[in-house]
Image 1 (cartoon, rainbow, N blue to C red):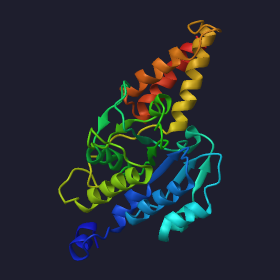
Image 2: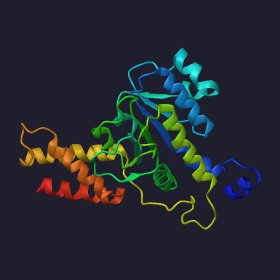
Image 3: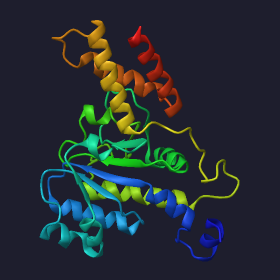
Image 4: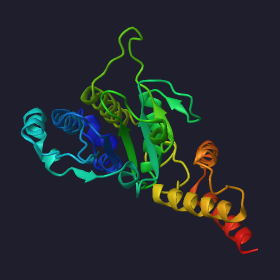
Length: 262
């Protein structure tokens, strides 16, 4: 039975294809301060049908506080993937949406939740892994962390009081994800119900390319031994704006390798 037929007879229930798209999305929490917020975020996820939670931290995540605030979602907490860096969390991810409460001067597309999450599903429709990244309670994501994201999502709240805690932000975005899937209708371009986009490189492919590029530029003398990472930061921004597909990155990689050999 198709998603459309299931949703007609069981309002609010997602079919197998919608769940496939949802299960390719992981929620990533970067250095949350309070274990209770991890439990609350897990609860927000489970109410919307998500279960893949990754936490970037060096602290315990399974605690009495996270258990108490997870409600009936402690199973999500117990299955958390704990990593030491955002790079590790995104290693096999092809498309990353970073959340931010502030509009920052970075060259990344900025979306409201519904439009941004449509782009996320455009990639999971291709079978790609995607991530929704949330920052610290007090300061959010750093500019360096936001530069690792393909797009930025901002929740349009009351400008006089736009403070959303971590779990609230997770709830808003995961709710919008579920609503997008429930609203899908036949006749929308792409087998997933969303306009599908070309395959994107995984995060680890980008990091491998950047390491190769920096090494090549240092060998050629373009980057001096005593220079900090400013040039590489600018090159990362340029590549992010280019929004390259996996095929395009491989071409660029090949061009660089050819130039290096000669």
